[in-house]
Figure 1: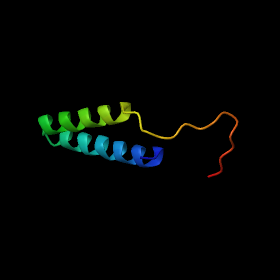
Figure 2 (figure 1 turned 120 degrees about the horizontal axis):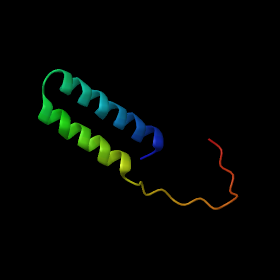
Figure 3 (figure 1 turned 60 degrees about the vertical axis):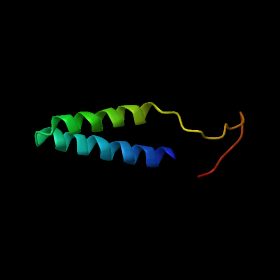
Figure 4 (figure 1 turned 90 degrees about the vertical axis):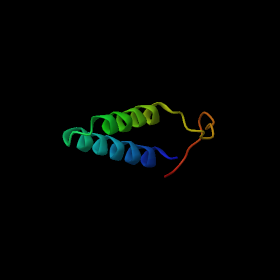
Length: 57
């Protein structure tokens, strides 16, 4: 998963969690916040770039 995709998913989870918290669904919002916290700490399996290698885009 690219960084942009990961950021979009985590932002969506946080917004859904805030909406659930405001509407009074505390258990569901807690689970969604936990999923966002776990997702933000996961390392993705991206290939290692060589030092000095230029990439475009």
